Each structure stands twice: as C-alpha cells, then as structure tokens.
Length: 333
Ligand code: KG4
Ligand code: ZN
Image 1 (cartoon, rainbow, N blue to C red):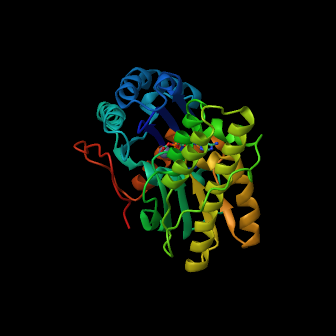
Image 2: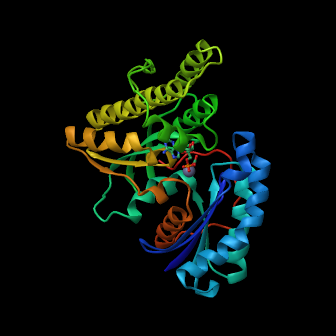
Image 3: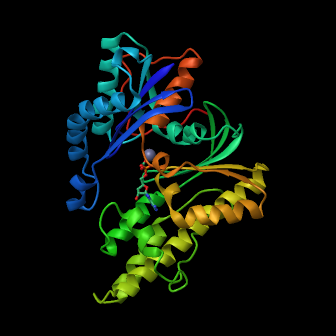
C-alpha cells in the first residue's frame, strides 16, 4: 500500500511516499531563508509558503517515487499539533487530494509521527520502549506501550529543548535556525568554560530549559557587548554540555524507574552531534539499546506521517473529511 504523507506543522513543507517501511520519496522544502530575517518562524509567512510550495513538492515527491497520483492508495496529513494556519494548509491539501482521488484520508498527530520515525529504519525495535521527543515545540518523554498507546512520563514545564537552542543561538548572534548553528559552534568551544546549573525538577521525569536561557543571557550581559569568538564558542559548548546531560539524566532515571532498556530519541534535536555521541556512551553504560533516526528523519518530514497513516489504515481506521486542525493536543494513552 502506497501512502502519501504531508507535513506542514511548522516551517518545513514536506511530502513523502511510503510503502510499508520503504521510503519511496521524501521531499522537504525548508523555509529557513524566509524566516531568517525575523530570527524565528513567522506563522503567517509559514502558511503562505506552504500554499506556494505544496503543489511543487507534490510533483517532486511523485517523480522521486516514480509513481503517478492515481497509484497512491491513501493520503495522510499532519492535523495536530503545530501552528494552526500552517496545519490548515497541509490538512486541506491532503483532504482535497484524497477526496478528488476517492482514496482514504488519515489525519496524523505530528508527535506520533516523530515517535514512529525510528521504525522506518529499524527492523529490531519492538514495543514497549521509552520515546523521547526533543524538538522545537516539545520535550516529552513517553512510555510507548504499543502503536497508538502512549503514556506521558514527563514533559517540559517551560521551553522545549530546541527552543532554548534557538533562543540562545539568537543571543549569541549565530543566526537562524539556531539549533544546528549552535551545535556546530559548540564543537570549537570548551564545554567546561561556563557553569550551567542543572534544572531542579525534583523526583519526577519533567524537563525545564528556561533556566538555561536566563543563565546564558546573564553570561552574555556580563560581557558588556564585548563578545569574542572564543566567548561565543565556549558559551555554546557549555550550554550544549549542560542541556544534553540533562536530557540523558532524565532518560537514565526513566530507565531505572520503568526497567525498560530500549530508547528511541526523535525530533529535530536528535540530530545534535553531542547528544548522539553521548547517547552511544550512556546507553552502553546502562546496557540499553538506542534507536535514533538518521539525520533526514530527525527533523520534520512527510515519511513519518505517511508511515503512521499506513499503520492506522492497516487497523481499518480512516479520518472523516470533517477533521479539523488543532494547535495543541495529547497523544492517546
Ligand atoms: O522536529 P523539528 O524539525 O520541528 C518541530 O517539531 O519543532 O525540530 C526543530 C528543532 C529546532 O528548534 C532546531 O533548532 C532543532 O530542532 N535542531 C537542533 C539541531 N538540528 C535541529 N538542535 C540542536 N542541534 C541540532 N543539530
Ligand atoms: Zn517536529
């Protein structure tokens, strides 16, 4: 069964064609250049670019998959969570396609897409597992019991990890999108140069990243405008060290608590070089198996949406054409 997946929850316009676990095409158009002058994603601009990009990306995805539109068996599109206007564009596009083709339509939760992204590349991962979503909008840790069944173990109390990366990168004048630029800058700095206190979230499995932002701002302010390249690299490295340590600390805590030795780390920040290196070391220390997507599947993409859509279809589920977009949502538990 060939499923077309559409993803427009933020600033990536993405369409993929997936058959089972096989990715036939996966096209992502980043809007980074359009948002860069503003230092962050402007929702209205994102929506307008999705409108312009979608027909072009659809052509590209079909061409790459070497398939005509009529050969698509079903259409899936992200309907929640995300920027409401951006979601509406992709959802409407997907529903219209499915309606015109007289094929089933499935609305997909973006978070479920990220959590399932690891299955596209791994035959060995089996339920249950600990799923950590680290992205620009979420830092959520789930006990994934089976497909469609997610127990939320902890979530950020303030900013998402990716948001902290983006804001600290902006403070340091690194540009947009901040996460990958800060990651690159950090590789040239000293991770012990500045001390970032680990967030105090008590015994639970929650996260918090706003304190890192405040600490970074205070370090920057102390420079009185004289921020050398060395300072920027050291601060980036020190924040990255603290943030990745914090993420791993939560995972290890959950592993001990739930006696589960399988981790899936997904979402844009899963592309982080320091996190990927540390995960390899920590998971072997605790005898855990880690599943982490390859870089193209860490960020937002249509393949993960198509895959989740195909799983729901297999269970005989399709969405009504009345399905609406929703800016926030929880996963089914
Ligand atoms: O999953 P994603 O593409 O979109 C959301 O669902 O939010 O994640 C985007 C986030 C952004 O905050 C971006 O800066 C961050 O992932 N990111 C990174 C890296 N690559 C992307 N953060 C740290 N290091 C990276 N290499
Ligand atoms: Zn995402």
